[in-house]
Length: 257
Image (cartoon, rainbow, N blue to C red; front, side):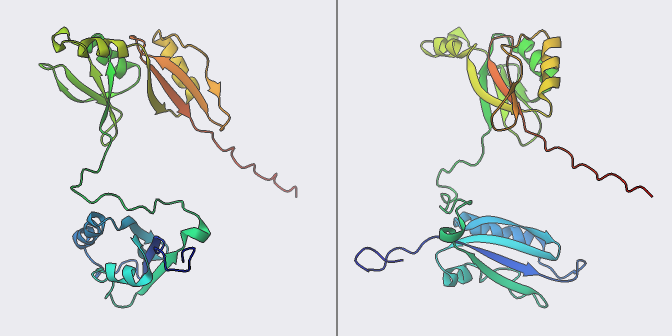
């Protein structure tokens, strides 16, 4: 790529896929998981790693890295534990985002230790009473307690391990102003929190049986799914959606003999 005056400009960022294939699915001389993780961690800390994973058909391993050109990609992979493995097919393929699209973020993430965000941990919901709110979120929504501290009032509920938790916060006057009033002002508003459900209709029935008044019936959305709005006993409003299901393929009628 050249500039308007014909001078060389910056080379475009590209993704390179390192593809290794071996024929025997029971091969026992492959790099260990620890070796592979150490190599991948080094690429990640340098902002090179985009994705990796094992291949099953045919057996192999896929690694995607960022580089400016093939020579740089080869240098990045010079310590690849698969590089010198005998009896394998080792390919380095380039994807040109200018011609095939940019479905993957090509900008390298900040290096480790630079303050980059690594995980969304919890979202706070302001409630009036810790015990009654915990019973509602567990009994009606099916959340489970992930962490709690009765002494400080800290409480986290989630749908399972490794997912974002809801932190139920009860404002205290001893927080002082304006913090106490600001927290109270957040109660009974739209939280912006969205859940996914496997059945909007079943969720609506569960909420109605629990005494929850729905502001409107489930809605069909232009994108094909369905949504429902609901609120907890303190008026904190949530949204849940159900993705559109593809119709089951029709079977051809059996031929008459």
